Amino acid sequence: MTTQTQREIVIAKYGAAHLLQMHSVASKPPAAGEVSIEVRYSGINFADIQMRLGFYPDAPKKPFVPGYELSGVVSAVGTGVTRVKEGDEVVAGTVFGGYTSHINLPEKNVFPLTKGTTLAAGAALPVNFFTAHLALHEMARIRPGDRIMIDCASGGVGTLAIQMALRTGVQVVGLTTSASKKSYIEELGATAMTRSEFYADRSAKDFDFILNSSGGAELRQQMQRLRMTGRVVCVGLSSGVKDGKRNPLRMLKAVAQMPRISVLKLFNENHGVYALNALHVLENDEWIERLGRAFAELADEPLLPHVGQTFPADKVADAHEFLQTRKAVGKVLLEW
Image (cartoon, rainbow, N blue to C red):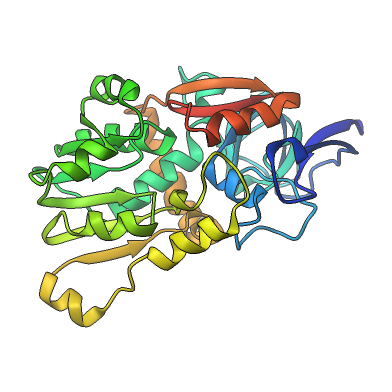
């Protein structure tokens, strides 16, 4: 493979979206067991906003390239690679480094694009699918007839979580910050409520499972809506960030308002509380294999991710602004 220049987006300084920087570097050929991908789309996640603000403890030292997922075309493969070949359309999960026009990844992190799925839709799948699958089926282990609530229902994870939950035969209530997004949630097949409607309605209770992305004080409020043997899985702390601004006091307040879980108290309530960091799961080879098998099953029963907005890669600041101000419905992508 001829050496070429690739572009990548770097977090060199914590703060506002305009501080993101585009760099050019020389690309490298794939090592043994690696796949080289010419990236077409990079997925943006709320975790990227938090790491840009300096609130993501697992992030590498600055400067670093954010990004957990992408889609593209295989440009070369290293020795020993058998799952994909040059020219194949693929999706991939990354442990950082996804905001780039070209990337080399271990073969285990690369998956063939499901037939009939566009590259844009493919980039909206890995993080959202892995998060929803782990929360619903590995941790909460939802069952037919369950009543569940998803508090990030209009986002990328929520879009897939609703579809996956309904296939299991459960009743789903989905929350959103904006009344204008309720119709989107209803079209997916869930009952839609704004956050204010939910907390004002005391009859919205007795949930077998709650998917919580907000953290902070809302977590305690949501736990009070569980029925006996109910479970909550926490996947984020979005309440600590508002409009993408770096506000350490707001984040500290959100952390301070998180309930301190007492096992003795849980004995009385018969509740379960889980916390999910999908990044750590994807660092484990056994779990990568397990999630890869689950992902491959989508070929038989595809999920339909919703790409809400696509931005040119050089407009990454606009993309972050769009996501952090909660204008997005579904997934936000960068196009290379």
